[in-house]
Length: 89
Image 1 (cartoon, helix red, strand yellow):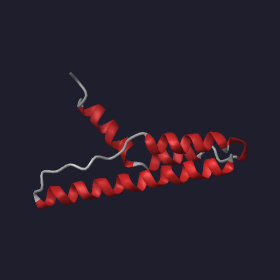
Image 2 (tube, rainbow, N blue to C red):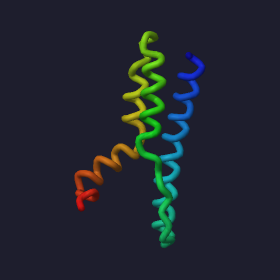
Image 3 (spheres, one colour):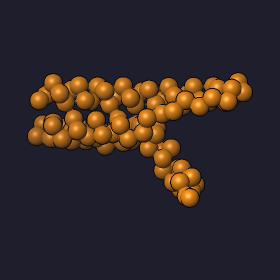
Image 4 (cartoon, helix red, strand yellow):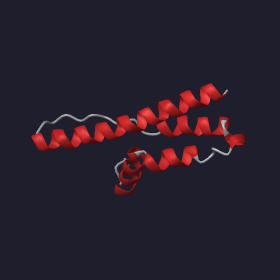
C-alpha cells in the first residue's frame, strides 16, 4: 500500500510540475506571437495526491493533498476563470 501511495504522490507531483511548464510555454508563445495554446491538466494532481494522503492517513501525512492544492497553478486558473464568468452559457 505504501508503494502505491508513493507512486500516486510522484505522479501527482509530476503533473504539478508539468502544469508549471505548460503555463511557462503559453507565456513564451504569447510573447513570440505564436497563436498556440498548451493545455494544463487541472484536478489530476490533487486527486492523485489526495488518494496518496488517504492511504497514508494513519502515518500523519494527510496534509499531502492540501499541499498539492496549494502548489498546483491550475486551481488558481480555475478559480480565476469561474470568478471571471468564463463558464457562463
